[in-house]
Amino acid sequence: MTGTVTIVEYREAWPGEFRVLAAELRAVFGEAVLRVDHIGSTAVPGLAAKDVIDVQVTVAALSDLSRATAGFEEVAGLADHPPPGFAGHPDELAKRYFRAPARLRPAHVHVREAGRLNQRYALLCRDYLRAAPDAAAAYAEVKRVLARRFPDHRDTYSDVKDPVVDVLMAGAEAWARTTGWSIGPADA
Image 1 (cartoon, rainbow, N blue to C red):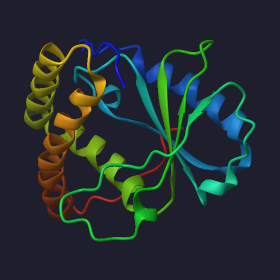
Image 2 (tube, rainbow, N blue to C red; image 1 turned 90 degrees about the horizontal axis):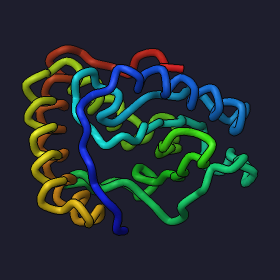
Image 3 (cartoon, rainbow, N blue to C red; image 1 turned 180 degrees about the vertical axis):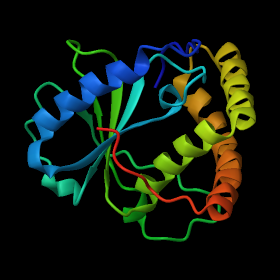
């Protein structure tokens, strides 16, 4: 995928914009939704990010979502990046992915199954970055450098960023063990 990669400073409006998206997603996806969470860099106060809200919708089964998605564009065939040493079942990384319609602000909607590795991963990463400002600052700098180096190549930006997140997650897993972290209540 090509397109411009631009990193902006944290915006105080992002949490409120997430809440609007969350309400829309609950209305669109209905009873299948178990929880809606603000994930990714825009969910971490002070963290620079692309100006795209990442939302995780948790469902019991990916098949629970109907095909009628009220303008949300589904991108088929995506799965999450496997962490180093991953030897689990591919279902642990399965997801459905949607882009928000033009009438809403830019957003990426990641639909994942409750209890799967990738559902936990997104929440742990967010919570760790919220609790570890030095790690968040270093991560922001990596993203800025990558955006300057690969401004017109989103795929390259993501391909280089994935192993950086793997390193970050090693720290997050250690933090989770030390603090007794567990998935908390939903954001919306």
